[in-house]
Image (cartoon, rainbow, N blue to C red; front, side, top):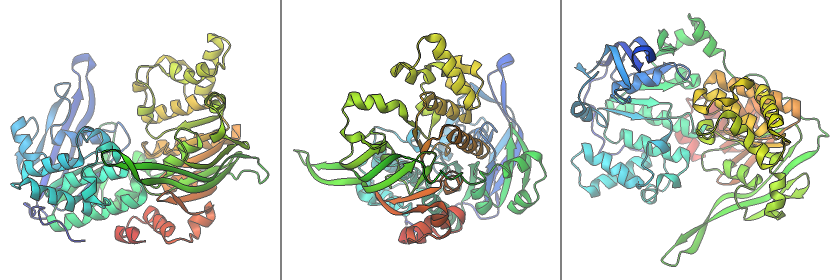
Length: 556
């Protein structure tokens, strides 16, 4: 695939020091309320180089990156000291006019969650064309052509049609591709990538990494990569900086960091990979949940009369069964139908055809009142715990929602006791139930979400990307927690994830989906060690060898 001609050529020769950060300090609040998020951090990035800032949530890596473009919430955030020089120009505390000349053209940034970065009221065309015309003297028609080229370059299917879409009409992976297209459209000298592949599937991840590498080669573009994903860091980085609690703990080449780590925190990070295999369910365990020839088709309407002219076949004839104490993993690219399958099995989206049976009873045939009686036994845990927990409710109120809805506690004292038991089971202090979600870390918030489901004593749970938004060490903790809870309560899990390493650690049976259909399914050993289908082999290559060529993934 050729690169779009409207991307400007590099303005900086490879090898020259592009960005120099020295003794950077960042604080929030002042006086007694001052919190120092970054303490004397120094690093540099040369043109054409890939430098990674690695660390867990709260380490200060994103705050350091946001300081470069002056994107922190001033005056709440401020810099007690330090220097940020870009091409020799001082950017720290620079004026808005000077920073606007740099943002979007010379330095661009891609964030973790594209839905919060894209305007939900404007089409993709309006947002992308506006970014291009702001920095390049192109007519709207030529800017639109360039936008289509960029969307094609980042692998968005049918880019001309997608221009008219609003952000919510795209999948998470597709929205991230749009954000990357916007960031690269003007040929920046430095791309700051803040966890851009955390929430996307492995094939898209491979494509994004390969795309950035190709653009680096052409433009001499530097990349400052911010992530907690060590597998990515090892493959793409020229140099690595390890951060913890606002300080740099160690720096070196990938070989030095991964093979000869010196600092105890670096060693801790490298050891925080999910390990082990799931315990198989007993062969005679009863079947808890089953979907037979399940279809979920969404109509495509067009014309003044909004006639149905076609269907989006989100789930198209899927059959899967889950036994007591068993975890079935569902993997596939964004838009493959994984989440829709989970929602349909919980009857949270309307199925077009087929059957969903819970303990032999067809859920699709139940009346709303009869289905409501089953809800307590069918629960879900979603990807973003912060988004799925009400910020206006205390932890106790959040966990108690289901108890109130299903009238499962005789009085407030019993309800508080059940809440305390659920919080204790997920490893949280029961005395924290009067606190609010923003007072907890990401991993703790996900434990709260699990407690909310667990307090109802379900038999079947849909786990929709429950670890993808978490740090590596926290992911391993959540996997261990889910295993323990499954063993203790004989839970049946449908585990949806794009992270095949997590699926390997959790699931004993694997379903591979693409385009709404099941491409392959079997035991974890069969699918991971001897995949039959080319698409499954491509998924495994992308997950376990990030040097796999993204073009090969697309062509299979």
